[in-house]
Length: 261
Ligand SMILES: [Zn+2]
Picture 1 (cartoon, rainbow, N blue to C red):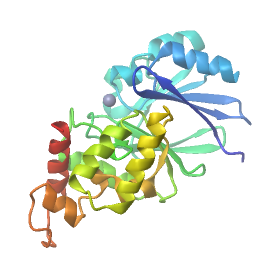
Picture 2: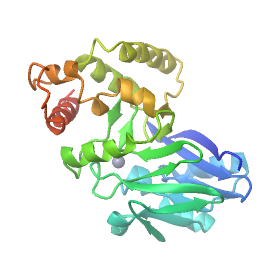
Picture 3: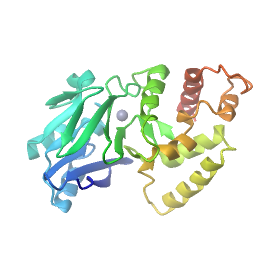
Picture 4: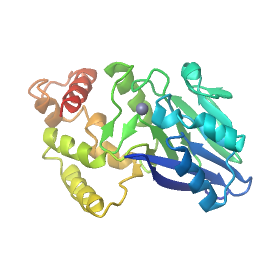
């Protein structure tokens, strides 16, 4: 099996669009529909015919182009069962544990509530890539618009079970801001300091910082690091020596601090 082809391109102010193409079956999916014109242009540039939309969640910068793109291409829309009523044009309802195929490529669905009630992510284990929408960002995670810290921490822990080399495509270029915040609560994390420097260099020449890998996120993303003593201390939890530190509470405090950063 040939690896899935992935084409990433900027949409709107700070979103990314993603096309997945399986050459053997000639199937092409877009992950979400942030911007109709940018997606149609990317399809025509690549010479690919859209067959599927994989929606992660209902927000307008993710599902707002569904109906126009479906009308233009006749594609089928796959989206979260838990939020079917808010996914325009949805045809196939998926949920935790579902596996479907794009050509010969298995695509696994995980429910990751927190940012919204019905967020899903799409994981292609054979290709070692994942499309995580607004659940996980490079050095960040989605805001808790409709969920609790407990839900989001539980969602992120599911992603943390993937192999470290899993390539992660998140939906926004928030990395530089996220790095500044991460440094404010874990300034002695050398991997984080090094990464933040590379991110600054990339952004200075307008290079994307996406995709990332799970391993890199585990070592630098504060939202995956409530076990860090330095972070626990800096969010005011305890002296950092308490083995029973409540990870959900640390996570909740990180999220609250970031919201007002
Ligand atoms: Zn969103």
